[in-house]
Length: 115
Length: 141
Image (cartoon, rainbow over all chains, first blue to last red; front, side, top):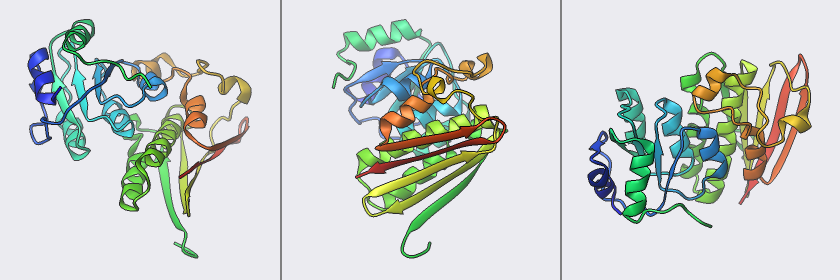
């Protein structure tokens, strides 16, 4: 699924239009605990989160993720978006809840990575 | 640089949580430029990032040193913080002494030290209460 299609499914706004949103993502995870993302996640391309601080972008970057979706109407400030753009990470924002957003993307075919 | 070795040094401030992670970001960028395999870069960057977070939330800051040798990334994280009374306990998954405030920032699940060990090929931690903590670890490729 392309990042632009993720945005369509979630009715999300693309906050980093300068990043390549035609890249494909095949796997995703959802968490507000960056500790868990760092510990348990492997080869996920997309992170859904309701946490809004710069460590979300850094965690995604360290894990080589290419897309972060902020749920529940969270909107990162411009410095975070600039950091994400510099790291090549596309950032989306949706008003949907974590549960709803994960359910939509699961129904559309995204899965967790199972190594 | 000395004797052909490539070294990086970073002083990590303990006062600003939002800046934690800038050193590991720079190391990642440097390793990419050097053509280090992506899996090794990722493992080293995650381990260093966890270390940076620990320096900020537990130790009041510290230092990170990275030393590149052929086929291996050697990393040292040192601080002069409060030290760890029980290292075995600190190394067990899920144990954390982090505050609720830190948990609200998305960290403090008690996975930092175990994760650093998991992602590296060698890991050693020495700590003295009241003196500080020293971690050495390496990633081979």
